[in-house]
Amino acid sequence: MARALTLLEKLYLAAIVIVGIGWIADIPRYAGVSLIAAEWIGMLLGIGIAGALLKYPYFKRFRIVDVLLGFAALGSWLWMSVNYNDWIIDVAGYTAEKFVPGIVAIVLLMEAMRKSAGLPITLLVWLLIAYGLFGYVLPAPVRAEALPAQAFVMYVYADTNGIPGLVMTVVGTLVLAFVLLGRLMEVTGATRFFTDLALSGMGHRRGGPAKVAVVASSIFGSINGTVIGNIMSTGIVTIPLMKKSGFKARYAGAIEAVASNGGQIAPPVMGATAFLIAEFLQLSYVEVVVAALVPAVLYYVSLFLQVDAIAARYALHGMDKRDLPNAGALFRTGWAFLLPLIVLIYLLFGRGFDPALSALAAVATLFVLITILRRRFLRPKEIAAMIVGGGENMLPLLMIAGGAGVVIGVMNITGLGFSLSIMLSQIGQNAGIFAMLLLTAALSIVLGMGMPTTAIYVVLSVVLAPAIVEMGVAPMAAHLFIFYFGLLSFLTPPVAIASFVAANLAQSGMWRTSFEGVKLAAIAYLLPFLWCFNPALILDGTPLEIVYAIGTALIGALMIARGMQWVRLGDFRVLVLGFALFGAAIAVGGSTIWFGSDSAINILAGLLGTVLLLVVRTGVVEWLGTTVSDDSSR
Image 1 (cartoon, rainbow, N blue to C red):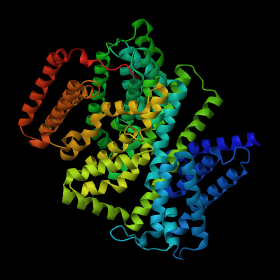
Image 2 (image 1 turned 120 degrees about the horizontal axis):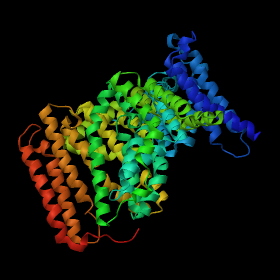
Image 3 (image 1 turned 180 degrees about the vertical axis):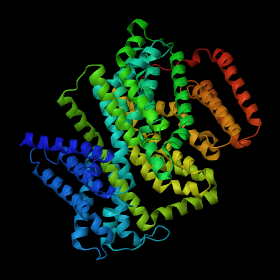
Image 4 (image 1 turned 90 degrees about the vertical axis):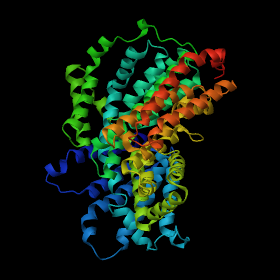
């Protein structure tokens, strides 16, 4: 019995990937079958819910309940798929054969989401469902439109503005394709190749293992799609190396957490969220990547320099070159791992191909290269494990996408999204746009706590982005603003999941690791405000405005990198100097806001910042003397 249930679970997980690939490759059309997106989504979601219910059973021995609930989920969602065409033109009303399966489908989706994606996102969606059903009793301005329960259920269950809508389509195609690519890279050893490549180039430098963590996590994190998955993939290698080379445990954990979190904002893939932003804004994927490029570079420049400052403070040397992988040997044996990424970037940017098809092309390229050129034939068990593993990775994403569909549906049908936008806009009009951005940043961090990357962006883009745009912020700037602050929930206490996971690997204190992570990522808390007031930082402006914005922001980032490593307990002079340099960094980095985006005064601000950096580097350390040393506690 147990073996049969395990086999059924694996069949569900494999079917997720197979059905997704079939839709991306447009197999139904070649087979002469006409399907629309909602019909395919119903099938994919039903399989995913059945798989999630079976993978996370209520009882280890008495699992027939999970099987039966899985069949009910599969049946209720397939019922929507089979009848969708008729329901589009059916004007007979919300009859029981429609909304009763809808109730079953939604309830089982919520339960599968609780099991696979966690309680925080599930509670949020349940609250919104309750609001959709009973929000009409609330006072203005948050009163919901009153509507029959049957109409509400059918809207969420079978309308393209509900569950079978945009988010499910993006996750079931774009995200699935990149999850499969990341999984194949793990199976074939590409993750280790990129880590070894970073070791060969950075390992011998001052604080080398930590710099390896920054480089490797930025590369793999963009494709991997999850912060925690990135930490568990690269951190198990880099964290022990950092500790062995002399980094304190809290620094090792914090560096890996911040580097892995940055992978989600790093082009070209950005953890697949770039595609969601493009879909929401109805822009090309290339436009999103171009806009996100400069902030991502500044993020990693600041992190890299802070890592170097920590290594310098403790006089940490790099690894012995004799212990490092040889770059030439790596390229001779591992170049096959680079070519798929080149193919991916070429198809995306050079040819403008569909991102999902481009990712599948990269998958096929890697598969062929590994099989033929390296003569490493993947055994059927390995291929099956890759497909099943890809389906397993997709489970929480599918459930979250379904929950996001509920959120969007409730926002639309009740008018809650419009009401929230009006409320936030009024705050902005009364207190100013800066106050509204502060409130939005705080809400983004709070709402993002405990939620996966994709869910964070989807929820925030529906709830908060419209209000920022209403205040005059450019749409791209607004969406990147909430995306950054949603991601910062992974590093910000009290629910700093990325820091806590990395701290566990490093065997360090969770709170101290989280505190160090916030310092290392300080630039990410400031940049979103800068590009909201001056979108030239995301390359939306004249060439002169862009040069001024990038130049002053870069100098500000350098000042922050040095100043934040002096913001620590132990010596009052060090603390004061750190905060003073941090304040000066804000003044220089934000000069395009204070003096105008095209003002020549920005040149003077940049020069003053550069001079201050040189003074700090040459004279202040001597003045501080031994106070630059840190305590020896973990």
